[in-house]
Length: 480
View 1 (cartoon, helix red, strand yellow):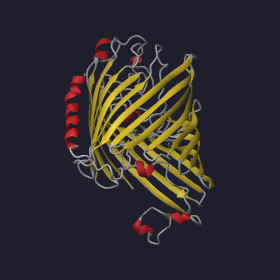
View 2 (tube, one colour):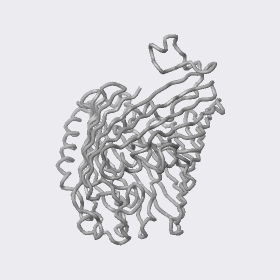
View 3 (tube, one colour):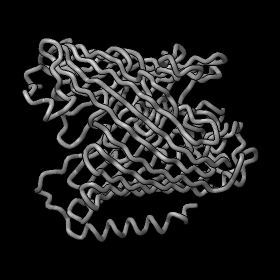
View 4 (cartoon, helix red, strand yellow):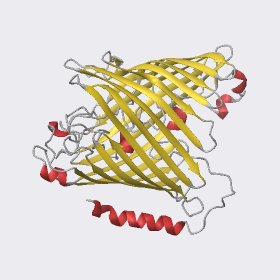
């Protein structure tokens, strides 16, 4: 399988080497460190629940011609507050070959073609200098599909955000409490995020405390996920009483070139048949030296497995990148190695919580972060200010040959039992994506992914297919 991407990778490396013929001036100021999360749509910067909704009114002056200059923005609200109204619409077309999930959550032998529509409306506001709020409504629909939509694709007319921000203290540092239904993203989002890719956005009910100072941001939190109401579209999603996430996520910003995350994240799961508890102690270093970029993240996971045995697992991510800003198209090249532990007992490996799996583990969503090794290389370029091009190649394999692959729901692929894998070589995925921003509000995206099935699919009994798979998609989105 590796040979199928070897030519592409060699061309990428030669291109990067050729474009970097002239080194940037080491004395020049460093470029702003980017996380290269280019798979996101334009909505993230303005729609994230981290909106500064508690700043004093003096910092948010309302112009007298607000209706003409910024319709639906900075509307006078209350005696000294303001209100922003925003919204978005996205239509995305899928053509999936051999990956439409039945009960497998991976290569399935099933094809489908369909449209996903997502419409959102949100209200950001501030009552006074200490009380702010956000309310968001979503309607997510799937049209034209042959098979049952995925859980993350449909959620008709629901309340996906409704929280209040309370400024508790503002001295040398600022302490804010956020109560209610909210989206969450921490750090790299490998363990916790409300992904923009999902048609039905992930949200949680609970409380977070946000402490911010010059050097630190500290976030203690306790939340429960909101679960989709499968029986009716006339009532809002309810809180899941069988799951809870809590912990402390901290970021140290006092270093000149580096950012350090330190965290303890707990996930308690209680199902009718069994339950589990996972505590992850982890850290992440993200930094830059001149044009070199680097990222290191890892964690030790302890707790109790669904079979009541002691749980010990972990994950490691190593990344080295290079910005070639002095070259045409401003390419950025990364090489990553991802590892997440498996176990001789099915289901007892690393648990990835509620992650941004679509971005890191391949755009075809074939694998969850459990019992997985992923050596991958990513190239991002910007031929113009409005156009971003991404090429990403993954080489997937099992971390433990006695365990099996897992889907995004942490279920064994095709219900396989421990010891059934005939090979650890899962295969190779190539992801190509073009993103064109017509304006700050309007975006078009086109992507194509292909997966070459590895020896695992040829040698493991009980799987539905051993053929290759492909994924073609495009979307247009608008927000105001």
